[in-house]
Length: 409
Image (cartoon, rainbow, N blue to C red; front, side):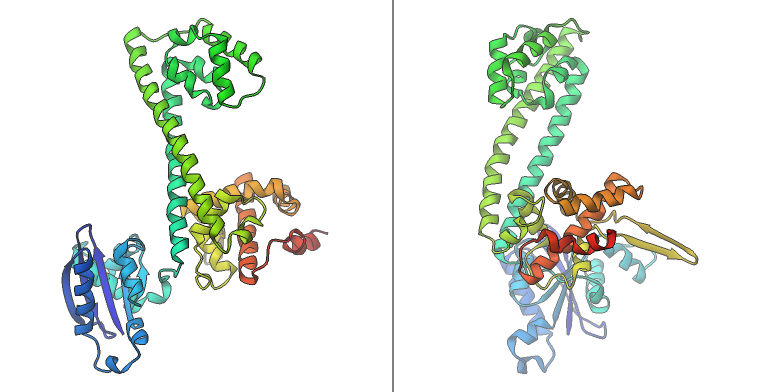
């Protein structure tokens, strides 16, 4: 076998190739792009063992193991397409391995390439090769992650907007529940202009926000906005109004883009062959199902069993044991996007599945906290999903919770 360490940067890659005995065969710095990949293939071919030309092409290239600190980008895609087995090494792991070779804390790009080569030579069994997800699955991951990132960006801007309003215009927070009527804030971003808003203008904004009982709420909002309140100096108030106007415009733009990209996510998800299996799960709709599918990937060989899928989801607990002391803890190092999706999935399942609700209630009666109970429910749901994908069958409420129903009775 040949083992390749690839320490990548924005415009170049430091490469080191070693053999099974750990002897360095080559070291180069290659440019990013097609020319660099072509030179890497030539470099690997120049140091290949003598018996490799007699092997089938697929078997020969499969004996090349590559360690690199990313799983994305055209460079990695080209390595996988060439047939090499590529391991995406967590950047947090590389410094730990580096300490095995030196205690001086010295660091260099060629040195990191050597460490990556040694990782795949000695410890590749403890690392996961890059999953063989389909191109359609990869495309869905891109749009689903972008959609989720936009939602997180919108949440940050809403929090900034609320923070600014609290400083100079707290009445707006009481008047506009969840800041739905953004058009009103855009038209009247300060207390003086807000106090002059008519009930008709307020009613129009409420109808566009799909609010109910518009006439009554319009009168209530107008009363709140016209009530006497503490004010900031005019200059400070004017500055805050400019900030709020900018935040409102950003939030409105994000709302439009989130809706547009949500349609793209739904389109990609609807074309995926596993879509029906995901949406059959309680609590998973189109958008949330697309996120879960995108983060798990669609490589059928990626997870050897349900436990492996639960470990990747971060829902299964970890055990720390030393001597007579044993502690079971939640996993805090995980895929944040998948953890967020599973949490929302568990929340939705409480409303859509009697079995999930009974399982959650059983956890709560044992004095397990709300979030811990949701995490255990999410762990169970991930296991059920794994079984459905493995057997290619849709979710069945009775079969999914039969074991727990029997145990509780």
